[in-house]
Amino acid sequence: MEKEKYFQLGIIKKEHGLNGRMLLLLDDAIDTLDGIEMLFIQIKHNLVPYFIESFSLNNRKAIIKLEGIANQKQAHEVKGLPVFVPYTALPETLQEKNRPENIIGYQVFDAEEGRLGKIHTIHAFPQQQLLALYHRDQTLLIPYHNAIVKNIDHKQQSILVHLPSGFLNTFLQ
Image: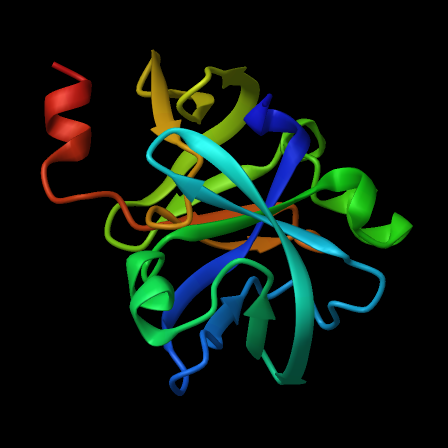
């Protein structure tokens, strides 16, 4: 499956009860799961499909029950894993807004370093996508991953990242 055609909906935080239900922390852009029938859990490097049996939503937290995950042990096995949906499964307004190519031109700011530069390209690889921007006259590649990308502000056309300690020094040498 081509991962660039999928939106990371959130991450499975923990088990919820004994019957396979789980707590799913949702991306800030998601306010409903209505109309979404199937989720894809990234297991190793593969997106594995699961039908949604039921869900309840409260703010950015969803309690979900997926077909094929019947008990606490099975739920524990997917704990901490990212969950995706195809862009085509998102409401139309979110489909367009959250496509990676739509953030080209956005300013990137690091929590520690401040302004890093504008995104000029997004490189899509099977394992991940990389944001390419010019920083100090060099191309800087930043993984487009929720562990690093903390917030995307579409109104301000800016992205807040939290780079690992020493990332810039290592990358720009």
